[in-house]
Image 1 (spheres, rainbow, N blue to C red):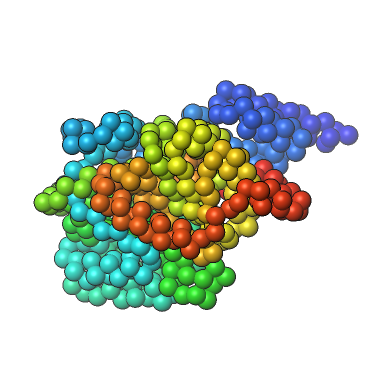
Image 2: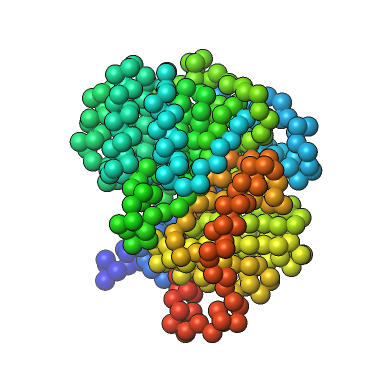
Length: 475
């Protein structure tokens, strides 16, 4: 009996602590109520789950660990760019509003002198990246959520080892969980050759609470500050082999030449400092801006728990709210927050043509069922949904055939709240037209969902969708 009373007191104290934090730092009433019920009815386990997945670390200073403070201080010292915002270079009011939003959230300015090459799939991306690495003269900086053993990384590794023989600097960042299966022997081979190879968000004692639920999902490559790459493509054989359940993955990436490469590089340097304590921004050769005679305008959007706002969610909301004629989305994990869901419905009901191009099957059944649970509400509001048979990993949104975003960010709570993400907003009708052309090509091969047919799906399907939707905040 004594043990029962002790456990009851401990549970009451833990629940009181959780309740206080939910009450004062919770974001959404519905989510807060769920956590209150979980922490009360599931002693100890509920509080542990809340600590891992439910705490609002943006507002709760107790959980602003030294790693978070370190990142924020570094951003303030090295990356509060006081350059002119260049808003006058943008033609439309909607473009200026989007650019202002990004600048006010991140202090990253608009870049006006750039050339963009749209890379439509993994094969094109790896060919372009390999060529840039072969031509590197000074340094190669790579950052990926997933780096996996396989044919693709073997080819990249050979190039990197060759460049090391030519005394080209090589730095590689990889997410500790996303690249968990990258072999120790490969890491040793690269390190022995003089490559600087470091994990991000490593699961270590003292930072476990911070790192487990917060992943670095960015995909960045910077070569000599002249060429940069970003988008959705990881270094994985899923992009070149059909020997997987989903076949060859399709994905969108871009190559950037011009002054936006410096903004891309700054994001890499921030993460590199966090992983290594080495401040590359203090060395002039890494901060040089490469200007070219081309006028494509790009705004790099960096987002994560180290920012006060959910920058990428606000970016997507601004796209949806400011669209006048059309909104087109390609995304593999479409599990919208309430605000995103309502924004799409309002846009469609206001006469904006909204088209979602999504994969019929995904690499997560839970995520796929959860995604399906939103379709009925969206279609009733007039949203057009197409399901493609192949698996697309692209994270693309473009509006009014004028402004496009290509990056690493999914339409889900994890990308908005928990991951470190990066998008490139392209203010260019010609580039957007190229993206639209690829979108239409894929859409023509996809199947448009008929609302009446969808409403007649089985009870089992509907039940699975609702159950999986319950876990959507964790996906």
